[in-house]
Length: 224
View 1 (tube, rainbow, N blue to C red):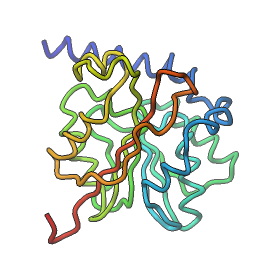
View 2: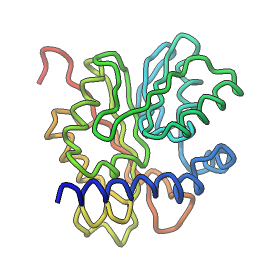
View 3: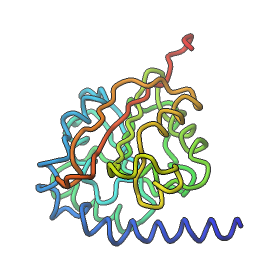
View 4: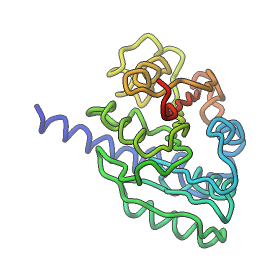
């Protein structure tokens, strides 16, 4: 059974590297993506300021990473985390072309983003959380450990309207995830739900594919 799960996870990662990358993640598509992704609202949900340290987990070739690099400025730092070296290499090339030297790439592991502990003001995951098939709560705990007290984790996912009633496993098989499942996960790991937008926008302006986000806050020391 364990081998079967690992095999399934490998297939999912391959799909992420082909269908999804060609559809939205390459730099050639970024201008079009800016028309519907609602980046300003996501940056606001992250509550980042110039000089902040933030992470883009599941960064692919760096679409959101570049927006974050601009938002935190020269005194800030952005960690771009992905499982695939070729994506990180493409990200580095894009950062050099755009003149950003505040980006650090990390080749994460399937169950660990390998982020520095307790140093980040905010983390964002776009269309990535549903790919964590095994022990998502364990992964969330690692993200939480990377945040400073008061830091924010923003999960961005999509759901087709006619899939809302499906089980979590059924949704993930379709590369969807509804907000209720993430609210539950946040509660289980001790992240306080904060800002959310449901729906935020339409995925690539498709009528029946809604994008949403949920922000969770790491409690400050001495609080619950």
